[in-house]
Image (cartoon, rainbow over all chains, first blue to last red; front, side):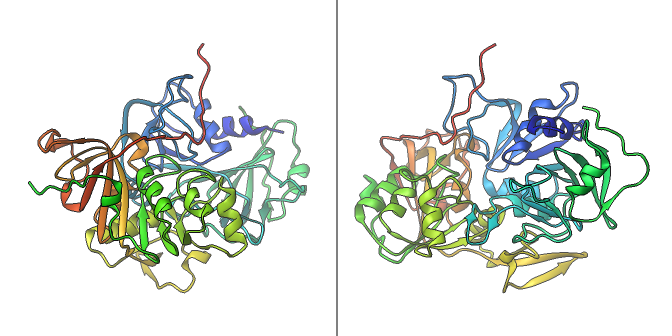
Length: 217
Length: 233
């Protein structure tokens, strides 16, 4: 089973040379720490920066330079700043190659829910609805089950949707899955996790074809 | 040169009234018009509608107006990390129109650029699209979103000149440029107000035509919401 860093490490393998990548809040933010350093990648943050770098050294924080998680950041050579409309133009116009975000629920048809639990919690969608409606390649990073131990991979989402039929891949603490017209296709198992365990934690339709390899991370 | 300078924040906010709709720049606490917000608190005007990506934190930014119950309605994309906002929203004291962030930015830009509405794929098939016109283009579904209408836009820039030209810094730019010229009156507060001719015309982010009033801001606190640092090796 993977921890949050393990999930981020596995997703980092999906980041290819020449990609512009948008990272959501939470586990997705960690992905930047594990991207190979022999490829060229630029991270976009929808509040208006391309070419995001690591956190600043203590004492060098700049209140005017943050990411979409409102964390202080630095920029790398080649970085640029822009306004929110232009930022979402990059996203809507499909200039960003890969979007990695968290979710509360994902359905076997690729629907995603991550902004509201009616009557209990409303964070708002932020940029997630724009990102999932436009990005061609959307990877969800999340734990396979919620705190109550219930599956987050469902036949249909029960929470208000963020987007419809948009998720392409899901990386959880247990598995890597692809959204297909048949359901969640199991691609890889996390180290030490069996297909049966993944099946038991998946409420939506799980498609298992042949031997399922263990993740290499 | 048409001079847009006003003496101070109270001159800059002349004409604000109960029940008006305001746009406020900023992302989280980054690039918010701190002086205009303080003045709105001081004036105590009520029943206002605020178009702003977030609503500050409990004790800073728009959170100050929420605390005093001056806001009737918020139009925002994200309310997390603000307990008072979430409480007022869940209890029904505050009307909230949650809007996808890119749609929020574009509704400002559309108002600035003279578009009555636009189609976006964001929110299609979700609660956000309920009751809205949808249309298919090249096999993909889109939602029709109208431009915002607002009485005042309050923006914060890094440098500005007497002509109302603005330059922003870092990610403090965010929604600020999109809101300039998107309301009846745009009020810009700047960290540094310079004589006309001091700024290189090649470097202007927002031309003064979009700004009606500009003033030298004071006492910027620029609070950091999430101070994240790394260790020196």
